[in-house]
Each structure stands twice: as structure tokens, then as C-alpha cells.
Image (tube, rainbow over all chains, first blue to last red; front, top):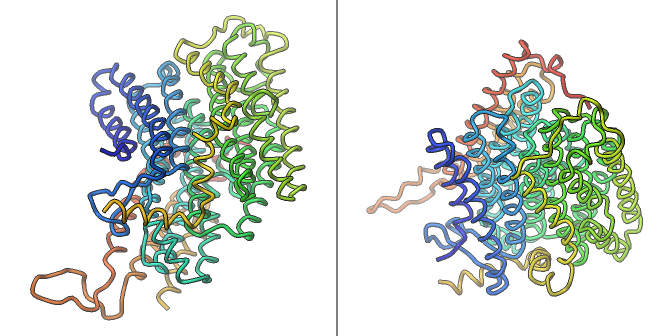
Length: 500
Length: 111
């Protein structure tokens, strides 16, 4: 019995049952999604051990042999992403129990939430290019609806903008998939990679690359395509902002882009140069735009663009250390950025405002939110001993090793500016004098506290992931899977033949 | 030639999305873009003078068109239907709030 289909089946079934029973029984709408995400987290951690043991697991849907049927593939990189996605989903789900009290129709929220998790898990474990597109759309459509969940003026406007830009991006991705299919006559990623290798270099790849860069770049909010993110992320309810910034842009954008570039098309210096340039551009532009913001969530959203820049920079270097650093930063960013958005949600929940100018002195009134927010801010600014420091350090060392001194110095500069802008958040938001109208605020309810404290704890101890013994079991699995590049297909075909 | 027309259709849709101010026209542009891509997908699987890919016991199938794109396009159409329905629903809500379809007047978000 393979556990692979469960990653899609559990959230999908959970969404179905929540929609069916959640309207009648309020308790189901709360408990069921939490059970689903908790079991997914456990399963994804189990999947790490399975990958460690067996290398690579293939599940053939409906018993069809690849390359004919759709296959689900679990390798190190997928497993790494599964842990990231499901861990965040679990904490966010726990947090939503209290936070969503202010909205009606919570069962609708949890249904869409679980559908989004379905889509992301599906993107991560699929081995078929068209199937990837389908799952990507499931996650994207759920997220368009969730951004509009408040149905106020701003939410609707942001959601419309996001939906249009997202759909155009999906259309470009589909166009790219069509071109690849017409050239290779297959949709299975491993088989496609083999066909591309057999047929030799061709112009079609040069046509497809811009389409994928545009499509997935828009999903990942890299800088020329980032316009939707600063609107969509602040407008969504706080747990959804945390999901969108924490994992959605990574699973849909970074993961899919890296999987296709590294394992299907194959990495070369030209692609690496594009990735490095886009990464550095996002990193610097994002942080410059962030520093002038006064809306707390909008500031955080711009920082997401900047941090995704780091991830792409690390992965774009193409060296083992660079990829390791990029993936480590991806994991860290999903932890501390979700935490920051959850904090922003807690502040908004208590004070009713997101404007930094109207806050102040909240540390005394909301100690848990204040301290966890301090942890996350130190982490995102890259101060030791928090996890953000280690991953940024690795990326910068890798850039220097690869002879990219210029990019390394941009990374340092962006890190300093990040520190400056979070100093501003802490100063105006949590320290300073308490405003009169905020005298009566209380700290967040219990479930929100639990999830924030747990995430802050992971921020604090995240650095241990880099210790060699621990690294072997988590980060290296992911980076090794990426670095095997187009050898990916031979491993998969070998496994398929062996399992016959 | 027909591939070229497909590209023209795609470009028309993209133009509609990028240049039009009316929300409904933007949605139409999006739909046209998706149609162009679906058409291209069908064309990719088409063979000149090909027949439908139905296998029968007592005949040999020669020169059939590629069935896979047809199956995939069905899925893609369903997805684009879902997107269109959602976007139209959002457009109706926007009209309720703002009393206009003009995107230059729907500007509450800065930057």
C-alpha cells in the first residue's frame, strides 16, 4: 500500500466532507480540517523516511504503466516540499479556528482551504506535466476565491486582478506544455526528458522557456511579474495570506519551475544566468518597495517577493551548495513569513488596524504576538542564531564560491535593507508608547497562540537542519533530487522496469 | 496557416486583457485566449485526412488522429469554465460594490 495517493485523497475527501457536513454541524467544520492537515503532516514526515530508505517511489494511477498512464512520483525534492506545505497548512488551519470567528460561513473557508492544499500536494507529487497543470489550477482557483473571501471593495479588486493575471499565466503554461508535447509526443516528465535528450537540442526549447518563465514566474511573483502579489496577499484573511506567501507561491511557482528546468529540460549556463538575474532583481526591488510601506501586511507581501528572490538566486547558481541554500531558505521563509502574517492577523484581530502609524506599544498588551513577531523579524532579517541567518549565509557563500561576487553583494545589501524595514515594524508596532485607543486590546486566543509559538520555536531551532546528520535526512534529499538533473528520467525508467 | 490564425486569436485575447478597461471585456479577452490555446492543442493532434481514433475489433485503424490532445482539451475546457465562472461572479460582486465596470475607477488599492 503506497501512501502517495493519500496526499491528494485526504485533503480532497476532507474538503468534500467539510462541504457536506460543515453547514449542519459547526464542530465538524473545525475538527475535520485539522485532523486532515495533521495526518498529512505526519504522512509527509513518514515520506521522508521512505525516500531515505528506497530512493524514489512511483505510484501508477489506475495500474497503467508509465509513460502511458499518469504516475505519481515521490523523490527527495517532492518529499521536502510536502513537509513544508503540510506543516504550514497544519499550523495555519489551527490558527484559523479562532481567527475565522469574525467571518460567516466558516465551512466554506475550510473547504476552499483544503482544496488549495489538495492542489499544492498534487503539484508536488505528480510526475505528469498536464496533471501538474490541472493541480496547479485547482490550487489557483481556490486561492482566487479565498482572496475574495471578505467580499469588501479591496478584496474583490485584488481578487479580480489576481484571477486575471493568474489565468493568463496558466494559459502561458498550458501553451508551453502543448509545444513540448507536440515535440516529444509524451506528457510524462521522465519520458519527455528522455525524448528531449534523444532528439538533441532544438529551437522548440527556446520557445518554451520564455513561456514557462512567464507563467511560473508570475505564479512565483518574480519581479517583472509581481504586480498581483502586494494586492492579493494583504487583502486575503490572515491565515490565507500566510498560506499564499508561505507555500503557494513556492509550490506553484518555484517548485514547478525548478522541476521542469532541472529535471525535464536540463540546466545550462543560459538558464542559470536568467534565474540569477531574476532572483537578484526580485530580491532588491522587493525590499526597496517594502521599506516605504506603512500597511503591515503589504510590507510583508513585498518582503515575500524579496525573499523569493533569494530562493531563486540560490537555486539558479546550480552548484550543490547554492541549491541546498536555496531550498533551506525556501523552508525557512515559509516558516517565518507565515508566522509574520499570522502575527499581523493577530494584531488586526485585536486592534482592527493594519496601519503601523496607528499602532505602538503592543508588546506590553500582546506579549505572545510581540515576542513571536520579534523572533520572526530577526529570522527574516538574517540574524544569528535564527534559521534565516544560516540559509542566507549559505546562499551568499555559494554565490562567492561560484565566482558571482556581484550577486553575493546584492544579497548582503538586500539583507541589510530587510533588517532596516523590520526594525521599523518592531519600533512602530510593538515598542514605543501605547496609543490611547489601544488600551483595551487583549492578546490572541489560545489556538492562535499555540500555532504562533510553535512556528516561532521552529524559527529558533531551524538552524539545526544544517548540521550534517540532520541535513542528510531532509535538505540534502531535496537538493540531491534536483541536482541529478536530467539523469532523473533514467532513474525513474529503471524503477518502472524494476517494479513490473 | 491555421496555426498562424490561432496565434492571431491568442494575440487578440491578450490585447483584450491588457488594453481594455471594461471588466467584462477583459474576461472576454481571457476566454478568447483560452479558446486559442485549446484550438492549438487540437491542431497539434490532427493529421491531414485523419480519422477518429475509435478502435473496432474487426478493422485495422490506419492514419488516425492523436486522441490524447482531445481528452486533455476537454479537461482544459472544464478548468477554463471554472475560472470564467469564478471571475464573472467576482465581476458581479464588484459591480454591486462600485457600481461600475471601468477598471480605472476601481482603484482603492495603492501602489
